[in-house]
Image (cartoon, rainbow, N blue to C red):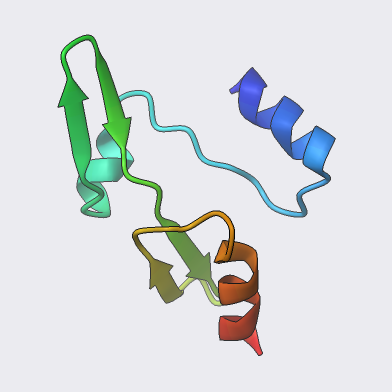
Amino acid sequence: MQAHRKFCAAERLPFDLLADPTGALCRLYDVRVKNLWIVKLAERVTYVIGRDGRIRNVFRNVDPRNHAREVADSLA
C-alpha cells in the first residue's frame, strides 16, 4: 500500500510493512481483529522471520516505546 511505502521511506525502515486488506493473513497467523462498527482494526503483531523462512519470534501486545529495543534484543 502507498501509505506503508511512504512511511517506510520516511523512517528509512530496512524491512517491509505488511498490509492485509482482506484479512486473509490475520486468519492465517491468528491475529485478532476488533470490529468497531465501520472499521476493523487488527492487533499489532511483529513476526521475526529468519533467513530460512521460519518464524523466530512473535511479539504481541506491542508497546511502540520499547518495541525496537525488544526486537533487537531478541536477535542478539
